[in-house]
Image (tube, rainbow, N blue to C red; front, side):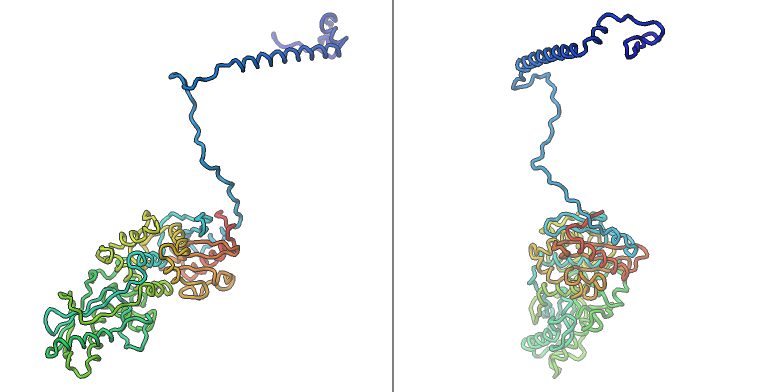
Length: 497
Protein backbone atom coordinates (compact mmCIF):
# COMPACT_ATOMS: atom_id res chain seq x y z
CA UNK A 1 0.00 0.00 0.00
CA UNK A 2 1.26 3.50 -0.88
CA UNK A 3 3.01 5.15 2.03
CA UNK A 4 4.12 1.91 3.80
CA UNK A 5 7.84 2.04 4.87
CA UNK A 6 10.47 0.23 2.90
CA UNK A 7 12.18 -2.46 4.95
CA UNK A 8 15.82 -3.28 4.14
CA UNK A 9 17.80 -6.36 5.02
CA UNK A 10 21.10 -6.46 6.91
CA UNK A 11 23.13 -5.51 3.81
CA UNK A 12 21.06 -2.41 3.18
CA UNK A 13 19.42 -3.90 0.08
CA UNK A 14 15.71 -3.98 -0.25
CA UNK A 15 14.18 -7.46 -0.46
CA UNK A 16 13.41 -8.75 -3.88
CA UNK A 17 15.32 -9.64 -7.03
CA UNK A 18 16.41 -6.08 -7.85
CA UNK A 19 19.36 -4.75 -5.78
CA UNK A 20 19.43 -1.14 -4.55
CA UNK A 21 22.33 1.19 -5.25
CA UNK A 22 25.27 0.63 -2.91
CA UNK A 23 26.81 4.13 -2.97
CA UNK A 24 25.91 7.30 -0.99
CA UNK A 25 25.67 8.04 2.71
CA UNK A 26 24.64 4.51 3.61
CA UNK A 27 27.82 3.03 2.13
CA UNK A 28 29.93 5.57 3.93
CA UNK A 29 28.30 4.73 7.26
CA UNK A 30 28.90 1.05 6.74
CA UNK A 31 32.49 1.63 5.88
CA UNK A 32 33.40 3.93 8.85
CA UNK A 33 30.84 3.25 11.60
CA UNK A 34 33.03 4.20 14.58
CA UNK A 35 34.09 7.51 13.16
CA UNK A 36 30.55 8.44 12.36
CA UNK A 37 29.35 7.58 15.82
CA UNK A 38 32.04 9.73 17.46
CA UNK A 39 31.30 12.64 15.18
CA UNK A 40 27.58 12.42 15.73
CA UNK A 41 28.09 12.42 19.48
CA UNK A 42 30.23 15.56 19.32
CA UNK A 43 27.61 17.37 17.27
CA UNK A 44 24.86 16.33 19.68
CA UNK A 45 26.88 17.55 22.65
CA UNK A 46 27.46 20.90 21.01
CA UNK A 47 23.81 21.28 20.21
CA UNK A 48 22.75 20.33 23.71
CA UNK A 49 25.20 22.74 25.28
CA UNK A 50 24.02 25.58 23.09
CA UNK A 51 20.42 24.78 23.95
CA UNK A 52 21.21 24.84 27.65
CA UNK A 53 22.82 28.24 27.34
CA UNK A 54 19.86 29.68 25.52
CA UNK A 55 17.50 28.06 28.01
CA UNK A 56 19.45 29.62 30.87
CA UNK A 57 19.32 33.03 29.19
CA UNK A 58 15.60 32.64 28.65
CA UNK A 59 15.01 31.74 32.38
CA UNK A 60 17.13 34.65 33.62
CA UNK A 61 15.34 37.02 31.25
CA UNK A 62 11.82 35.80 32.16
CA UNK A 63 9.13 38.32 33.11
CA UNK A 64 8.62 38.09 36.87
CA UNK A 65 4.97 38.47 38.07
CA UNK A 66 4.07 41.85 39.51
CA UNK A 67 3.08 42.21 43.17
CA UNK A 68 -0.61 42.57 42.26
CA UNK A 69 -2.28 40.45 39.63
CA UNK A 70 -3.96 42.13 36.72
CA UNK A 71 -7.77 42.24 36.78
CA UNK A 72 -7.88 39.67 33.98
CA UNK A 73 -5.52 37.26 35.72
CA UNK A 74 -6.99 33.85 36.54
CA UNK A 75 -5.62 32.08 39.60
CA UNK A 76 -6.14 28.48 40.61
CA UNK A 77 -7.91 27.55 43.87
CA UNK A 78 -5.95 27.97 47.07
CA UNK A 79 -5.35 24.72 48.92
CA UNK A 80 -6.07 24.67 52.65
CA UNK A 81 -3.02 23.85 54.71
CA UNK A 82 -3.68 22.03 58.02
CA UNK A 83 -2.38 23.68 61.15
CA UNK A 84 -0.94 20.40 62.32
CA UNK A 85 -0.10 17.28 60.41
CA UNK A 86 -2.08 14.27 61.61
CA UNK A 87 0.02 11.49 63.02
CA UNK A 88 -0.17 7.95 61.78
CA UNK A 89 -3.26 5.96 62.75
CA UNK A 90 -2.54 2.93 64.85
CA UNK A 91 -3.57 -0.41 63.39
CA UNK A 92 -5.38 -2.30 66.17
CA UNK A 93 -5.76 -6.01 65.71
CA UNK A 94 -7.62 -7.50 68.69
CA UNK A 95 -11.17 -8.28 67.54
CA UNK A 96 -14.26 -9.01 69.64
CA UNK A 97 -16.45 -9.44 66.56
CA UNK A 98 -17.30 -13.03 67.47
CA UNK A 99 -18.47 -12.08 70.95
CA UNK A 100 -20.39 -9.06 69.62
CA UNK A 101 -22.17 -11.32 67.11
CA UNK A 102 -23.32 -13.82 69.74
CA UNK A 103 -26.89 -14.79 68.91
CA UNK A 104 -27.89 -14.50 72.56
CA UNK A 105 -27.54 -10.72 72.22
CA UNK A 106 -30.14 -10.70 69.41
CA UNK A 107 -29.41 -7.07 68.43
CA UNK A 108 -26.45 -5.18 69.88
CA UNK A 109 -25.72 -1.50 70.30
CA UNK A 110 -22.31 -0.89 71.79
CA UNK A 111 -19.48 1.56 72.34
CA UNK A 112 -16.04 1.27 73.91
CA UNK A 113 -13.63 4.18 74.26
CA UNK A 114 -10.43 5.00 76.05
CA UNK A 115 -11.45 6.58 79.32
CA UNK A 116 -8.41 8.86 79.37
CA UNK A 117 -8.58 10.24 75.81
CA UNK A 118 -12.12 9.58 74.59
CA UNK A 119 -10.85 7.74 71.51
CA UNK A 120 -13.54 5.35 70.26
CA UNK A 121 -12.10 1.86 69.88
CA UNK A 122 -15.27 -0.14 69.22
CA UNK A 123 -18.58 0.95 67.74
CA UNK A 124 -21.81 -0.86 66.91
CA UNK A 125 -24.48 1.76 66.26
CA UNK A 126 -23.03 3.92 68.99
CA UNK A 127 -25.06 7.02 68.13
CA UNK A 128 -28.34 5.13 67.72
CA UNK A 129 -30.62 5.82 70.71
CA UNK A 130 -31.57 2.64 72.56
CA UNK A 131 -33.31 1.67 75.80
CA UNK A 132 -30.70 1.72 78.60
CA UNK A 133 -33.00 0.00 81.15
CA UNK A 134 -31.68 0.55 84.70
CA UNK A 135 -28.42 2.03 83.41
CA UNK A 136 -30.52 5.21 83.23
CA UNK A 137 -30.31 5.40 87.02
CA UNK A 138 -26.78 6.75 86.60
CA UNK A 139 -28.24 9.84 84.90
CA UNK A 140 -30.85 10.21 87.66
CA UNK A 141 -28.20 9.99 90.37
CA UNK A 142 -26.01 12.54 88.60
CA UNK A 143 -28.96 14.90 88.14
CA UNK A 144 -29.57 14.72 91.89
CA UNK A 145 -25.94 15.60 92.58
CA UNK A 146 -26.20 18.57 90.24
CA UNK A 147 -29.55 19.96 91.38
CA UNK A 148 -29.77 18.92 95.03
CA UNK A 149 -26.18 18.33 96.10
CA UNK A 150 -24.96 15.14 97.78
CA UNK A 151 -25.76 16.41 101.29
CA UNK A 152 -29.38 17.33 100.55
CA UNK A 153 -31.93 15.74 102.93
CA UNK A 154 -35.64 15.19 102.34
CA UNK A 155 -37.90 16.49 105.11
CA UNK A 156 -41.16 14.89 106.27
CA UNK A 157 -43.23 17.20 108.47
CA UNK A 158 -46.22 17.28 110.80
CA UNK A 159 -48.07 20.60 110.85
CA UNK A 160 -50.97 21.93 112.91
CA UNK A 161 -54.23 21.67 111.02
CA UNK A 162 -56.60 24.50 110.20
CA UNK A 163 -58.64 23.64 113.30
CA UNK A 164 -57.76 22.24 116.71
CA UNK A 165 -57.87 18.47 116.73
CA UNK A 166 -56.41 18.21 113.22
CA UNK A 167 -52.79 17.61 112.28
CA UNK A 168 -51.26 17.24 108.83
CA UNK A 169 -48.61 14.72 107.76
CA UNK A 170 -46.69 16.15 104.80
CA UNK A 171 -44.53 13.95 102.58
CA UNK A 172 -41.92 15.28 100.17
CA UNK A 173 -40.67 12.13 98.54
CA UNK A 174 -38.84 10.27 101.32
CA UNK A 175 -39.71 6.66 100.50
CA UNK A 176 -37.18 5.48 103.09
CA UNK A 177 -39.24 6.78 106.04
CA UNK A 178 -39.83 3.61 108.07
CA UNK A 179 -42.76 2.30 110.05
CA UNK A 180 -40.49 -0.06 111.99
CA UNK A 181 -39.81 1.03 115.57
CA UNK A 182 -36.55 2.56 116.69
CA UNK A 183 -33.95 -0.18 117.08
CA UNK A 184 -35.18 -2.19 114.09
CA UNK A 185 -33.68 -1.57 110.67
CA UNK A 186 -35.66 -1.61 107.45
CA UNK A 187 -34.23 -2.35 104.02
CA UNK A 188 -33.00 1.26 104.12
CA UNK A 189 -30.60 1.02 107.04
CA UNK A 190 -30.39 4.24 109.03
CA UNK A 191 -33.65 5.66 107.68
CA UNK A 192 -35.76 8.07 109.76
CA UNK A 193 -38.67 6.63 111.77
CA UNK A 194 -42.38 7.36 111.95
CA UNK A 195 -42.03 6.66 115.67
CA UNK A 196 -39.72 9.67 116.09
CA UNK A 197 -42.10 11.86 114.09
CA UNK A 198 -45.15 10.71 116.09
CA UNK A 199 -43.53 11.08 119.52
CA UNK A 200 -42.34 14.61 118.78
CA UNK A 201 -45.73 15.59 117.32
CA UNK A 202 -47.59 14.22 120.36
CA UNK A 203 -45.35 16.08 122.81
CA UNK A 204 -45.67 19.41 121.03
CA UNK A 205 -49.41 19.06 120.42
CA UNK A 206 -50.04 18.17 124.08
CA UNK A 207 -48.18 21.29 125.20
CA UNK A 208 -50.34 23.51 123.02
CA UNK A 209 -53.75 21.80 122.99
CA UNK A 210 -53.93 19.95 126.29
CA UNK A 211 -57.75 19.77 126.28
CA UNK A 212 -58.37 18.95 122.59
CA UNK A 213 -57.52 15.44 121.36
CA UNK A 214 -56.36 14.70 117.84
CA UNK A 215 -59.36 13.46 115.90
CA UNK A 216 -58.16 13.78 112.31
CA UNK A 217 -54.92 13.38 110.41
CA UNK A 218 -54.68 14.93 106.94
CA UNK A 219 -52.31 13.10 104.58
CA UNK A 220 -50.60 15.60 102.28
CA UNK A 221 -48.84 14.08 99.24
CA UNK A 222 -49.21 17.17 97.08
CA UNK A 223 -45.48 17.83 96.68
CA UNK A 224 -46.27 16.62 93.17
CA UNK A 225 -49.65 15.56 91.80
CA UNK A 226 -50.53 12.37 93.71
CA UNK A 227 -52.53 11.13 90.73
CA UNK A 228 -49.34 11.16 88.62
CA UNK A 229 -48.08 7.94 90.16
CA UNK A 230 -47.69 5.27 87.46
CA UNK A 231 -46.33 5.51 83.92
CA UNK A 232 -48.48 3.91 81.24
CA UNK A 233 -45.42 2.26 79.68
CA UNK A 234 -44.55 0.36 82.88
CA UNK A 235 -45.41 -3.27 83.47
CA UNK A 236 -47.84 -3.52 86.42
CA UNK A 237 -46.16 -6.81 87.24
CA UNK A 238 -43.23 -4.80 88.60
CA UNK A 239 -45.57 -3.59 91.35
CA UNK A 240 -47.06 -6.96 92.31
CA UNK A 241 -43.70 -8.74 92.06
CA UNK A 242 -42.27 -6.14 94.40
CA UNK A 243 -39.80 -4.15 92.29
CA UNK A 244 -41.61 -0.81 92.07
CA UNK A 245 -44.05 1.20 94.15
CA UNK A 246 -46.46 3.79 92.88
CA UNK A 247 -44.70 7.15 92.82
CA UNK A 248 -46.31 9.18 95.61
CA UNK A 249 -44.59 11.82 97.72
CA UNK A 250 -45.90 10.22 100.91
CA UNK A 251 -45.16 6.55 101.62
CA UNK A 252 -43.21 4.45 104.10
CA UNK A 253 -40.60 1.72 103.54
CA UNK A 254 -40.90 2.12 99.78
CA UNK A 255 -44.47 0.80 100.24
CA UNK A 256 -43.13 -2.73 100.79
CA UNK A 257 -45.27 -5.35 102.47
CA UNK A 258 -42.06 -6.48 104.20
CA UNK A 259 -40.04 -3.39 105.18
CA UNK A 260 -36.85 -5.46 105.47
CA UNK A 261 -36.93 -7.05 102.01
CA UNK A 262 -35.44 -5.59 98.85
CA UNK A 263 -38.15 -7.24 96.76
CA UNK A 264 -41.59 -7.21 98.33
CA UNK A 265 -45.10 -6.68 96.90
CA UNK A 266 -46.26 -3.08 96.87
CA UNK A 267 -49.79 -1.81 97.44
CA UNK A 268 -52.18 0.18 95.28
CA UNK A 269 -52.55 2.84 98.01
CA UNK A 270 -49.15 3.87 99.40
CA UNK A 271 -50.57 7.10 100.85
CA UNK A 272 -53.26 5.23 102.77
CA UNK A 273 -50.73 2.66 103.99
CA UNK A 274 -48.48 5.46 105.27
CA UNK A 275 -51.45 7.07 107.02
CA UNK A 276 -52.39 3.83 108.79
CA UNK A 277 -48.79 3.38 109.93
CA UNK A 278 -48.68 6.95 111.26
CA UNK A 279 -51.91 6.50 113.23
CA UNK A 280 -50.43 3.35 114.80
CA UNK A 281 -47.27 5.29 115.69
CA UNK A 282 -49.34 8.12 117.24
CA UNK A 283 -51.33 5.73 119.39
CA UNK A 284 -48.13 3.98 120.51
CA UNK A 285 -46.70 7.38 121.47
CA UNK A 286 -49.79 8.17 123.57
CA UNK A 287 -50.23 5.08 125.72
CA UNK A 288 -52.62 6.76 128.18
CA UNK A 289 -54.93 7.90 125.36
CA UNK A 290 -54.97 11.55 126.46
CA UNK A 291 -53.87 13.08 123.15
CA UNK A 292 -55.11 10.81 120.35
CA UNK A 293 -58.80 10.06 120.06
CA UNK A 294 -59.29 6.28 119.66
CA UNK A 295 -61.60 7.03 116.72
CA UNK A 296 -59.03 9.21 114.92
CA UNK A 297 -59.45 9.18 111.14
CA UNK A 298 -57.35 10.05 108.11
CA UNK A 299 -58.16 11.97 104.97
CA UNK A 300 -56.12 13.23 102.04
CA UNK A 301 -55.63 16.92 101.46
CA UNK A 302 -53.20 19.81 101.55
CA UNK A 303 -51.67 21.57 104.52
CA UNK A 304 -53.08 25.07 104.99
CA UNK A 305 -50.67 26.24 107.68
CA UNK A 306 -47.00 25.92 108.44
CA UNK A 307 -46.89 25.74 112.23
CA UNK A 308 -44.55 22.79 112.68
CA UNK A 309 -45.19 20.13 115.29
CA UNK A 310 -42.47 17.72 114.20
CA UNK A 311 -40.16 16.84 111.38
CA UNK A 312 -37.59 14.21 110.45
CA UNK A 313 -34.98 14.27 107.72
CA UNK A 314 -33.79 11.54 105.42
CA UNK A 315 -30.22 10.42 105.15
CA UNK A 316 -28.14 12.52 102.74
CA UNK A 317 -28.76 12.02 99.04
CA UNK A 318 -25.28 10.48 98.71
CA UNK A 319 -26.61 7.56 100.79
CA UNK A 320 -29.70 7.24 98.57
CA UNK A 321 -27.48 7.18 95.50
CA UNK A 322 -25.48 4.28 96.89
CA UNK A 323 -28.66 2.41 97.81
CA UNK A 324 -30.37 2.92 94.47
CA UNK A 325 -27.31 2.07 92.32
CA UNK A 326 -25.97 -0.95 94.20
CA UNK A 327 -29.25 -2.87 94.17
CA UNK A 328 -30.99 -0.96 91.38
CA UNK A 329 -33.80 0.40 93.55
CA UNK A 330 -36.53 1.65 91.22
CA UNK A 331 -38.56 3.45 93.89
CA UNK A 332 -35.65 5.57 95.13
CA UNK A 333 -34.73 6.44 91.55
CA UNK A 334 -38.26 7.63 90.80
CA UNK A 335 -38.38 9.67 94.00
CA UNK A 336 -35.06 11.33 93.22
CA UNK A 337 -36.14 12.16 89.67
CA UNK A 338 -39.35 13.80 90.87
CA UNK A 339 -37.54 15.73 93.62
CA UNK A 340 -35.00 16.97 91.05
CA UNK A 341 -37.88 18.24 88.91
CA UNK A 342 -39.67 19.82 91.86
CA UNK A 343 -36.53 21.53 93.17
CA UNK A 344 -35.84 22.76 89.62
CA UNK A 345 -39.24 24.52 89.60
CA UNK A 346 -40.61 22.08 87.03
CA UNK A 347 -43.46 20.74 89.15
CA UNK A 348 -42.35 17.17 89.78
CA UNK A 349 -44.50 15.59 87.09
CA UNK A 350 -43.41 12.53 85.14
CA UNK A 351 -43.62 14.47 81.89
CA UNK A 352 -41.25 17.14 83.23
CA UNK A 353 -38.38 14.63 83.49
CA UNK A 354 -37.70 14.96 79.76
CA UNK A 355 -36.58 18.50 80.48
CA UNK A 356 -35.45 18.27 84.11
CA UNK A 357 -32.91 15.43 83.81
CA UNK A 358 -31.05 16.61 80.65
CA UNK A 359 -31.00 20.16 82.04
CA UNK A 360 -29.32 18.90 85.20
CA UNK A 361 -26.72 17.03 83.12
CA UNK A 362 -25.65 20.08 81.12
CA UNK A 363 -22.72 20.70 83.42
CA UNK A 364 -21.15 17.50 82.08
CA UNK A 365 -21.99 18.45 78.47
CA UNK A 366 -24.26 15.47 77.94
CA UNK A 367 -25.89 16.09 74.53
CA UNK A 368 -29.67 16.23 74.73
CA UNK A 369 -30.13 15.20 71.09
CA UNK A 370 -31.45 11.66 70.94
CA UNK A 371 -32.24 11.50 74.66
CA UNK A 372 -35.69 10.32 75.70
CA UNK A 373 -36.25 10.43 79.46
CA UNK A 374 -39.59 8.84 80.33
CA UNK A 375 -38.80 8.06 83.97
CA UNK A 376 -36.00 8.05 86.53
CA UNK A 377 -35.56 4.31 86.98
CA UNK A 378 -35.22 3.02 83.42
CA UNK A 379 -38.34 0.84 83.75
CA UNK A 380 -39.81 2.24 80.56
CA UNK A 381 -38.73 0.74 77.26
CA UNK A 382 -39.40 4.18 75.78
CA UNK A 383 -36.29 5.68 77.40
CA UNK A 384 -33.52 6.19 74.84
CA UNK A 385 -29.83 7.03 75.22
CA UNK A 386 -27.09 6.30 72.62
CA UNK A 387 -24.41 3.94 73.93
CA UNK A 388 -21.66 6.36 72.92
CA UNK A 389 -23.27 9.10 75.04
CA UNK A 390 -23.52 6.73 77.99
CA UNK A 391 -19.95 5.44 77.61
CA UNK A 392 -18.62 8.98 77.39
CA UNK A 393 -20.53 9.90 80.55
CA UNK A 394 -18.96 6.92 82.29
CA UNK A 395 -15.56 8.42 81.48
CA UNK A 396 -16.56 11.40 83.60
CA UNK A 397 -17.91 9.18 86.36
CA UNK A 398 -14.55 7.42 86.51
CA UNK A 399 -12.78 10.80 86.70
CA UNK A 400 -15.20 12.04 89.38
CA UNK A 401 -15.84 15.19 87.36
CA UNK A 402 -18.08 17.80 88.98
CA UNK A 403 -19.14 15.69 91.96
CA UNK A 404 -19.57 12.42 90.07
CA UNK A 405 -17.32 10.73 92.60
CA UNK A 406 -20.57 10.27 94.58
CA UNK A 407 -22.01 8.29 91.67
CA UNK A 408 -18.76 6.38 91.22
CA UNK A 409 -18.81 5.31 94.87
CA UNK A 410 -22.26 3.78 94.45
CA UNK A 411 -21.64 1.63 91.37
CA UNK A 412 -21.45 -2.16 91.71
CA UNK A 413 -18.13 -3.96 91.16
CA UNK A 414 -18.08 -7.20 89.16
CA UNK A 415 -17.94 -10.27 91.36
CA UNK A 416 -17.97 -8.23 94.56
CA UNK A 417 -20.88 -5.86 95.23
CA UNK A 418 -24.50 -5.12 94.47
CA UNK A 419 -26.20 -6.37 91.33
CA UNK A 420 -22.85 -7.52 89.87
CA UNK A 421 -21.80 -9.63 92.86
CA UNK A 422 -22.73 -12.90 91.16
CA UNK A 423 -21.65 -12.02 87.62
CA UNK A 424 -18.47 -12.60 85.57
CA UNK A 425 -17.77 -16.16 86.63
CA UNK A 426 -16.10 -19.10 84.88
CA UNK A 427 -14.12 -18.06 81.80
CA UNK A 428 -14.92 -14.42 82.54
CA UNK A 429 -13.57 -14.47 86.10
CA UNK A 430 -10.59 -12.30 85.13
CA UNK A 431 -13.04 -9.37 84.97
CA UNK A 432 -14.03 -9.74 88.62
CA UNK A 433 -12.85 -6.72 90.55
CA UNK A 434 -11.81 -4.98 87.31
CA UNK A 435 -15.23 -3.95 85.97
CA UNK A 436 -17.36 -1.28 87.66
CA UNK A 437 -20.75 -0.82 86.04
CA UNK A 438 -24.52 -0.42 86.23
CA UNK A 439 -26.64 -3.20 84.79
CA UNK A 440 -30.19 -3.13 83.48
CA UNK A 441 -32.90 -5.62 82.62
CA UNK A 442 -36.24 -5.33 80.85
CA UNK A 443 -38.44 -8.05 79.41
CA UNK A 444 -36.64 -7.85 76.06
CA UNK A 445 -33.42 -6.09 76.96
CA UNK A 446 -30.21 -6.53 78.93
CA UNK A 447 -27.72 -3.70 79.36
CA UNK A 448 -24.41 -2.90 81.04
CA UNK A 449 -22.40 0.32 81.16
CA UNK A 450 -19.41 1.41 83.16
CA UNK A 451 -15.64 1.36 83.06
CA UNK A 452 -12.82 -1.14 83.50
CA UNK A 453 -9.10 -1.48 83.76
CA UNK A 454 -7.92 -3.62 80.85
CA UNK A 455 -5.33 -6.36 81.09
CA UNK A 456 -2.72 -4.00 79.62
CA UNK A 457 -3.63 -1.28 82.14
CA UNK A 458 -5.67 0.85 79.73
CA UNK A 459 -8.75 2.51 81.29
CA UNK A 460 -11.80 1.88 79.10
CA UNK A 461 -15.40 3.11 79.33
CA UNK A 462 -18.16 1.13 77.67
CA UNK A 463 -21.90 0.67 77.15
CA UNK A 464 -23.65 -2.40 75.71
CA UNK A 465 -27.39 -2.78 75.02
CA UNK A 466 -28.78 -6.14 73.88
CA UNK A 467 -32.43 -6.19 72.86
CA UNK A 468 -34.99 -7.69 70.54
CA UNK A 469 -37.77 -10.23 70.20
CA UNK A 470 -36.84 -13.60 71.56
CA UNK A 471 -34.13 -12.26 73.85
CA UNK A 472 -33.69 -14.27 77.03
CA UNK A 473 -32.37 -11.95 79.69
CA UNK A 474 -30.22 -14.48 81.54
CA UNK A 475 -28.59 -15.64 78.31
CA UNK A 476 -28.07 -12.07 77.11
CA UNK A 477 -26.55 -11.12 80.46
CA UNK A 478 -24.03 -13.94 80.17
CA UNK A 479 -23.19 -12.93 76.59
CA UNK A 480 -22.62 -9.29 77.66
CA UNK A 481 -20.28 -10.50 80.40
CA UNK A 482 -18.33 -12.51 77.83
CA UNK A 483 -18.12 -9.52 75.49
CA UNK A 484 -17.00 -7.21 78.29
CA UNK A 485 -14.33 -9.68 79.42
CA UNK A 486 -13.06 -9.93 75.83
CA UNK A 487 -12.77 -6.13 75.69
CA UNK A 488 -10.82 -6.21 78.94
CA UNK A 489 -8.30 -8.67 77.44
CA UNK A 490 -7.86 -6.62 74.25
CA UNK A 491 -7.24 -3.34 76.03
CA UNK A 492 -5.75 -0.62 73.84
CA UNK A 493 -5.36 -3.11 70.98
CA UNK A 494 -9.14 -3.42 70.65
CA UNK A 495 -10.31 -3.23 67.05
CA UNK A 496 -13.77 -2.17 65.91
CA UNK A 497 -13.61 -4.68 63.05
